[in-house]
Each structure stands twice: as C-alpha cells, then as structure tokens.
Length: 510
Image 1 (cartoon, rainbow, N blue to C red):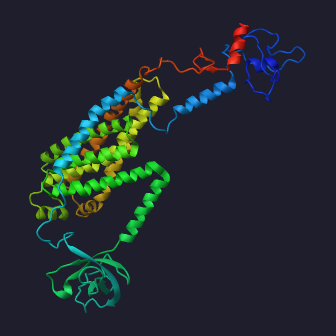
Image 2 (cartoon, one colour):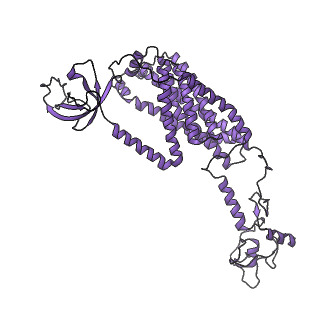
Image 3 (tube, rainbow, N blue to C red):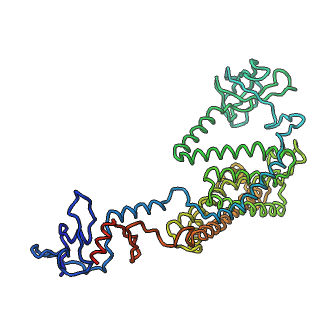
C-alpha cells in the first residue's frame, strides 16, 4: 500500500503543489523526479503514521508544472478564444478574395440605384376619391347623441339590436378648420365614437358643402408612436449598441423602400429589377451596419444573395406558369387603375423578394455565426466536420423558420380562409383559386429560398473558415505559442510555465 504525501510535507510542495510566493509557505527546493522512491522530499515521513485507507493505483507520471503561472496562462488563452466577442480576423489573402467578389457587387448595386433613381413620387392628374386615394384632414368629436334610427333614415338589418348615434365632429386642419359636420353611426357599426376622440376625415371638394367631409378613420398616432418608442427602448436596453445599430438599419430599410423602391416602381421601371437592386442595397447596408464589416458578415451577404437569386428565378417561373395576374384585391386594382402601365406581375414578384429578405438575413447570419463558433471550439476540425455540424443546427432552424413563415401568411389571410369555410368550398377550389394560389406561391417560393440558404451559407462559411485556419499564419510555426520560461507539455496539456530561477535550479539538478 502506498502512502500519499502529507499536505504539509516538503515533497508535496515540490512535486505537486503550487509555487507560492513569500508569505505563503516554505520555498520549494530541488526534489526528485515524479515517480522516484522514498527519500528527502519524496513526500513520505517515517515519523508520521501511514494512511490506513487504501489508495488507488498510481497514475502515469505527468510533468510537474507550477500551478500559479500555468493556470494564469491557460485562463488567458481560454478567454482569448471565448465566444460572444468580435469574430477573429481572417488573413489578408481571404480579405482580398472577399473584397474581389463583394466590391464589384456593391458597385453594380450603386450604379443600378443611380440609373433607376425616380427623382420623387410621380403625381397622377387627379384623385379618384376611392380608398387611400383621398384628401384627408384631422378632426375631433365634439358631440355624440343617441337618436332613433328611423328618424335619421337608417334601416336596421333584421336581428341587429341597438340604437343609432349622431356624431358631430369639427375639422381641425386644412382650409376649412373650425367647420362642424355630422355623421350617423348605425348600431351594427364596428367603430364607436366618444367626445374628444381624434379622427381622420376625408375631404371631397366636389360634394355639396354639408357633405364635403366624412369620417374615414380614427386617429391612432399617439398609441402607435408610443408603441414604437417602447419597442426601440426594449431593443436598445437588451441589445445595447448592437440593438441601436439594428434600429438604424431598420430606418435605412424603410428609407430605401419609401424613397427608392416604391417611387421607382410607380415611375414605370421594371418592378423585379427595382426590387433586386433595392433589396440588395438594404441587405448590404443593414447587415454590415448591424454585424460589422468582417468576413463573417460577408459570408452571410453571399449566402443571402444566392438565395435571393433562386427566389427570383423560381418566383418568375411559377407566376408565369400558374397564370397569376397579381390583381387580387381592391388596393391592387386601384393602383392599376391609377397607373395602367405598371407591371402588376413584376410587382407581385418584387413583393416576394422583399418579403423574404428579412428572414433570409436572420438565417444566413445565424448559420455563419454557428460555423465560426464551431471552428473556435474545435480549431482542428475540417471543413466537412464543420459543415455537418452546422447543418445539424440549420435543420432545426429550417423547421422553425418555415413554420413561422407559413403561419404568418395564414394569419394574414385568416379572414379569407374563414370566408371560404363559410362558403363550404372544397380544399381544391380554395387552394387553386387565384386569390389563395398567389399566397401559396409566395409562401412556398420564399420557403424554398430559405431552405436553400442554409446549406449554401453553411458551406461557404465552412470552406472560408477552414481555408483561413488550416495552416499557420504569418509569423507562426504551426505550434501553440510558449511564453518565456515555459516548456511544451508532452501529454497534450497546455504548456508548463515557470520562473527563470526555477528553470535554472532544474538545470543544476540535472
């Protein structure tokens, strides 16, 4: 039975314990190599009783290492590759390769925006007074009175109970500010009014004086602005600088959409070309602004670009094959009547591209970050190993994202689905009607692009990060760096560090 060295024995401090500085214990002296027999400094004191408990068999000797300095180096090394920080920089060669691909692409996007720039929203000759094509002003409810429906000429449908109301409102903006008008609210109206409530009223200049203004909607400016402020505060509070940059990217997206994409389409430019150029500009601005100008973001940009091209090709093919016109609701019909030369099919395809862009950014950035983190956790992993590991993550992402996208479209079309249910139409009649087929094409084409973005982006990231770190970089020997006074470990552990005085004592001992 072997006896372990006592914690207070000199041999324990020399062979196994940390090298303490002054004030922490006796200074270590030269001792025997690990595995030597009893003797001075071996850890066994004949005057002390042996430990009666059985001990495990001795392990193979490992090189002794000073505890304090070795742990400090290991701790610093672990944090140098920790997750959550900025991505590790890639070599200058790979930066040049990425720049050779993305700089010409960015130049083409910038040139396309210059050539397609609309110079403002075109004005049509006159307003139709239908839907959103109305002149509007602000107003406020000043009085609400309950009246008999028969007295005001309102016929109440059978089964509807309640009383009619006469709402008086005063115009607060425009050339007729201060004028008062009345409107009758039937009992089956969805919107009810109260004194002091803000309104949006439509102005019809050609109507009789007493009918020139009518209630169009309620004023929702205050709650919507408050909700936007709460959203911005939540994003900044949790995301901090990254959240603030995401909000700036959101502003950039809406600016490109309202200043370039929509006016360019209304000016007669090809909607698909405008959507590709504008969507690419949004992608470049938001991704680099939010995630930084680095190789990781560049891989996400390339993956997003490939997926957008696939969505454009598939969308164009199936829109033509399914004979979709794109005119499926009153808003599109109104736009077509105001701008007859507008290509509605191209507008439908442009909507598919822009609608898929936001989810594509999320998928590509997540996959690229996953591969980068896997490489930092396993520096020796090959590109194939990284690709397979990244795809295991991506499959879960695909399932959740596709389900989210389908449910989002189903939720937006829920009233339409209820209408078909009430009509007791068959599934085939509902699915193959143009109104629903348009949404199906939109959903499935976008989902195919999302699914394709996962292997494409994962493959690009795995190849890039493996090619960059498969060999030693400039000034490196391919081995881990060893600080002064340290010797490499022979058992695969971290280097052993020690003071110069300790190394000199070891050399004298040998």
